[in-house]
Length: 236
Image (tube, rainbow, N blue to C red):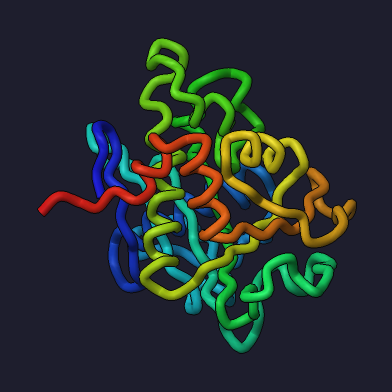
C-alpha cells in the first residue's frame, strides 16, 4: 500500500528487499543500540544483517521512502508457532489473559519495529528509534511540525492490522516501555499490560496485549479518521 511519501510492502526471504530489511535491522539493533548480538551473517552484497530463529515463522514489512527507495522503517509479526513468541522466555506473562478468546493459537507478536536513523526527523528523536515518537507522529499536527507525519508509523501499523485480520490473528503482544505504551493508549490503541516490568532489559519493558476488536472500538469512538486509515484498502 502506498501513501504520499512511502510505500509499505511485505518482504519475503530470498529477495533483495528482504536483504535490505535485514541490513536495516542490523544497523538499528546491533550497531546503533547494541541490544541484539550480531549473528555474523551477511547479505549477498556483503553487508552485515540481523536475523534470528523467529524470522522463519514471521511476516516482515518495510516502509520504503519513495523519493530515495531506501528503507525508512520496518517491523515483523511473529506468528503463532510451536516454539512460542520472542517475549515468552524473556518476560513474565500473567495468565489468564484479559480476553477470553486470546488463546496462543490466535496471538502474534509485534517485534523488531523501528524507524531508521535518517527518518527520525528531530534531534529529540535520537536514541528513540523504536516507533519514533508516537505522540508527534500520530497526532495530526501540520507537516511544518514533522515532515511526512503521521504516515510512516501509522502505515506500518496498518500493514500489521490488515495482515493479522487476513491471518485470523485477533491479538498481538509487544514488549514496550511505560512511556511509549501510555502514549499509544492515549491515542486510542488500547494496549493492556499482562506482566511486570523486566528490569534486566534497557530501558525496562513489559509485555502488553492489544485486541483488534478493542482497537476498532476505541478508534471508532475517539479517532475515526485513524480507524478509516487503518482499514483502507489499496486502490485497484
